[in-house]
Image 1 (cartoon, rainbow, N blue to C red):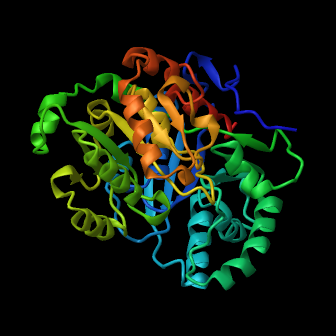
Image 2: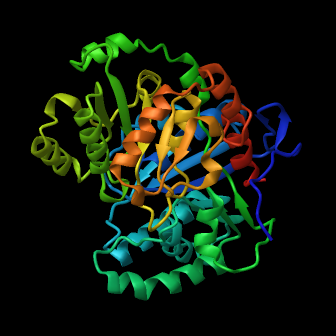
Length: 400
């Protein structure tokens, strides 16, 4: 039996987009990496910020497994949340888990919400015997990866940790059908226990963006007529950023006035710079680092390129949905679940095996074909399961 995205119920909503609040306070403990630049934490923070307006009775605590301060810590506290950083690293297993258990005891929490896929098994184990009303695992990826450099240790630990998740979690939530299936496998789905909740996109940011395409190119030192291929995301191996440079090489060789703009950071940044130099593309590539003005970037670009490796699918590909909110055409690999396609007219899906030249040609076609206007694309996302209203209601309905 297939699992459909969780629908907003009257119990969870009092009117369009408004969550019905509890009569008594409910204490939520979210276990995250840290409140910084990660897509998961940024999505969760947006939902938290929206939920605080409608449901002040919910008390949010973010337990950050990384000890370092995050850029969103102070804003979270200003909005009424508690932010706790682990005193011990994950590698110091015994002290980390004992410390986490003490936090759980002191906080008298009602809900435990874990955001680290099968790594959440450790957090569930730390909660054993404590009076949580509900324990939730949220699956944001499909790889079921573990934070160890040893593949042998990872292979030995994966199935036992998966079983802990399956047995101890009261609810298992995936950001897509693929993400949910990565943990459940062939296990029969229980609609009350196994659910899909899509990420919420803050479409208001895209509606409010006032891009100046000419000024944007001038600021980057580019000709005003330059077409921009935009890459948004971490510069890591599985995101495959150097593939964009192969595409760019084909396009520039064909005489096209095109540049590639990268918004993100990661361990492949120096490799990208090296390939840029090797191919002689310095005047056609801009690396912007981490940016929090993604709506403006997307509304100023011409095509979003998403060439993630296909061996393991992405959990969802939030940037794909955001690009559609911006009315930005997309060429993407088969790494992204089909659920992320809301405006099909904007999206071209190609296998990576087609090669960079085929991707470059598809990009040219996208830039030249007629497409839905920005307002039309934005409206489609706002009426989908990715809207902020729907996303907030769906998440908060878990805590009823």
